[in-house]
Length: 254
Ligand SMILES: Nc1ncnc2c1ncn2[C@@H]1O[C@H](COP(=O)(O)OP(=O)(O)O)[C@@H](O)[C@H]1O
Ligand SMILES: [Mg+2]
Image (cartoon, rainbow, N blue to C red; front, side):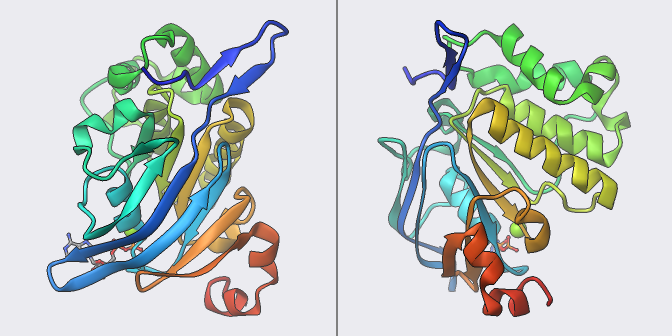
């Protein structure tokens, strides 16, 4: 059985059990197209890391290969001490990895609370679902207000928050998000990033965030990799990223 996401210690402090992620020499092919070329990077336990890059760079492919949806041609992906390559996608959530895919995919004809309950299908047995639900509803008060409403009747931003909340019901050791801000109004994007920062700060979970908007991502991430046509062309801290003339030109539009 895996360790809990976090536990309350005697003095009320929370000890995180966020996982590390180590991707080594990962290559992915779609037929004759090589989508990822020898990708290597490491995310430390509890780190908030970004995956930046233009459309078509291979960002979604990277997340899909980590969560078992795409089979790599070569390479290794380790979550904590465990190898993920070769584990079928349906077994991945039980390893403590939650993936919020591109575009919010909630169950529109189910209520908000039922969507959240479905997220708990692979919650570790040592975590209380009621307690997790309470945490998610505290992070997203709007979901609490709309608990009995059908998910399909929520706004785009609320559906995205629900998709993130549902992923948190797994009590993940690593949370991966594929462009959660896509298609949302600027004010909602702000709110989404504020909530992601709160998740990182308050739950201590490791986060891997894909974002096309580097300026926006730089407000929350600690480190990032940049993918350019399937290759890692930059790895560095938020500060290094902000200082890089190349990145300013290529990705920040400055
Ligand atoms: N299922 C697929 N079959 C064939 N090619 C694909 C498939 N998915 C993605 N690709 C190609 O792989 C490359 C990387 O795509 P993707 O990972 O979606 O990039 P990003 O998320 O950075 O926009 C692109 O050239 C894309 O056209
Ligand atoms: Mg993508």
